[in-house]
Length: 490
Ligand SMILES: Cc1ncc(COP(=O)(O)O)c(C=O)c1O
Image (cartoon, rainbow, N blue to C red):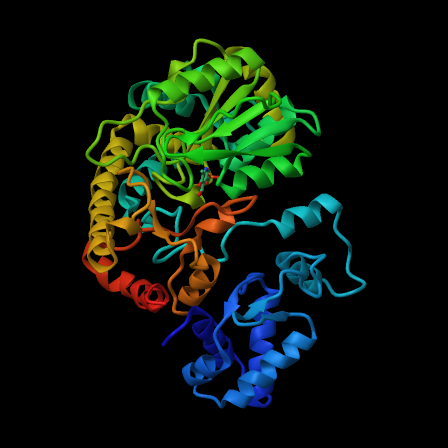
């Protein structure tokens, strides 16, 4: 019978040829434990089973287990088997901390504490393209010819201001085009003057953290939630408070201290896909207003809703100036464009524009003017429409494959939106180890449990389907089925 631990160890054994089989087996197990692939408490297969699975003698496995036990990596419980120890020999350091520390040769320039913290909790994947990498659109469909025509035309008559530094939070033509688009497509209440162009959501959030908060201020973030929110907020010295997410997105716990900011993805919660209903939205707005908290609405992928009417932005419902809306071209066009925007309350506009210029010195004039024309001439709406249709078909293909190959219960919340969905797993399945095994086969998924700051309440794999063609979906998904079925049969 195949086991996940067996797959993991076989992958690692295949990566090294040096040393005796016993030593390689010991190294494979020890490194899997140290790097967190085999989490504390994980039950290892019986030595006889692992030996049969790996095609080695039982004595070899028993020797490796005994060695690891004597070093404190494994413990045995009479009658129930061998487990990864709850407290590891180097348990004062997290797995990633060990990786980072190990990579710094002595004598190298030390990082600040917050620099270390940022690296230790870094969330971005090394790879940003391919099946089933979440968060990336199908960049192959970007209309290069149209874009090229626009940029060539603009290049011949570029106003001198666009070649210098921008001090106005972006260029006016894009601010006007976006205001018109956001009012219609997202029901956002705004004037062009309220729009500030930035180089990505992380930069927008960084500016807001610096300009609206003092070190130590509390910020609500979703649990599970987007790692990028936490990274940017925490490096600014803010205390992120994880707030549980349910079927309607961020909950509203009673009896908690008011936060300065509430960072939320109401139209398509990342990563669960939950959509916040009207009553919850109104309650959140009321609560924030009563506390004097500012809501930061990250509306990162809501252009993509399939077969259902769009969910309007929370910002459009607010009576007060207490919502800041964040949008991005990363999902609708491509992430490398590094262009995002925020809609800020009137009273903050001028001050945030000056601060943006002081900190980041706005630029990318040609890109911004080209985007303005791309929107004005209708190419943006046409591209979003085309991609919506394509992603809708891909989502349907993936949902159909999961239903057929595994069963409907494996589909997490089906919100009919966005570029990813969750393959829901039973709690006993180690989603980190499963993602690792799949990664060795060239399938990039992200384990749901790593999106929790505290104890993971649910297990699953986040599957980005945007760059997998519908016709290839079943074939591309089959390695996931093959890795999962033996684990489910246990
Ligand atoms: C919730 C959420 N917000 C924002 C972003 C990134 O936006 P940007 O590319 O504009 O930095 C992502 C990227 O995956 C995301 O998942």
